[in-house]
Length: 539
Image (cartoon, rainbow, N blue to C red; front, top):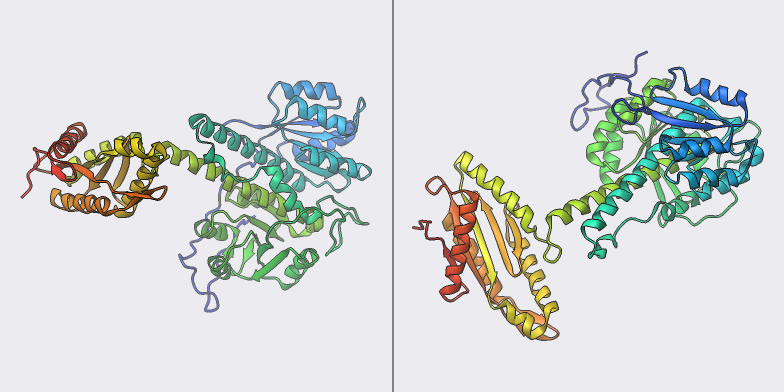
């Protein structure tokens, strides 16, 4: 079966901003592969052998590559298995021969808190299943409304969600271990999953599915249980060329006043809308007049990488579903299965997963910053500066370009600490860091070298230019009015420079030593001056 549709271009649909090349068919990759040569191990805990066989038939025998299923009907066997640490997810019936209800979930959850659990329940047990969701279960799957695609999607999301939580906790732990005395680094961290999840459920009521005659909820219906809503209206961009299909989707969401939808019909129009305003979610038909879902994902990654994309389509192909997930879609929902309950689950899962990704990247960014930046001044730290110096010196020698190293020291800084106290000294260093950041080029590297000593690396700069830059910095500090608790005072700066060029080819170590010597010479000769090293020729 052809998985893609070639872009149709005419006068009505001019070329996209970057052009739309003919899509290449990606190779089918299982969404259940955890790593190279590693399958996902699913433990099925089900009291009914016939239903267990049905689930194994649905998911097994090569229909779901990368998934290994093990079945038991006894709680003791299940808890023993998860304690061994080789289970990636649990599909749990809440009626077993030896126990039932909340106790089943609690036993599994206590045995392995990090293993995601998906609840299987009859409609009679729906209230219990929803209470278990609040206790920490990942999802609830009504047995009478089960279908292979929704089951696969729920398993995949549960595992991805659990993996994201572990990654986030591990990175936050490493961040704290490396900076145990800097708790302020965590003050801007995103809220926990539970703090964020309740408002998401608030958009749709409690999120507890309600069965109708045909197993679907009616358009516009919402749950009775009130939950706090998000602080802003949920904005959804719908890319849907079919008027009929859009009206159907809109009918399911119109009963929720906290949701606002904007509809476009083409990729080009969608990109234009995304460039003009922020959306919380994008719902896209796979086949569009000017491309397909793969084309849209490729462009939207460049434009707004944090916005989750869900494919809601009439294009029937399970292989294409796996491929579009691998390409970056957050979920895939066939229009034939569209109803309130699946739609709610897909939207909530996509928003939650997007939140995780953003929070994880924010934590990674903080880790990078804290590994290269000085906490007090916001300049790079000494370790990162030395690495940059080595690279820039090697580049200058390789290409014959110029490089200047400037070492700086605050004159009489000890008097500030002795007179006003160390908090005043910290204030001075912070202000000096801000002044340096504002006065250097993007290609320059400024560093707090240690104490009240700073360093500045100037690539592609000759000695004459560097001395002029040093003089500007010296005058900036000399004329700056520092103030502590209403008392003004002034400071000066001494600078020592050493250069590396075709005529003066030094190693990074020698360059650093010569810049240090020039700084000490500036101090000996009266401070508040710029001095070049003796090895440099300045005409």
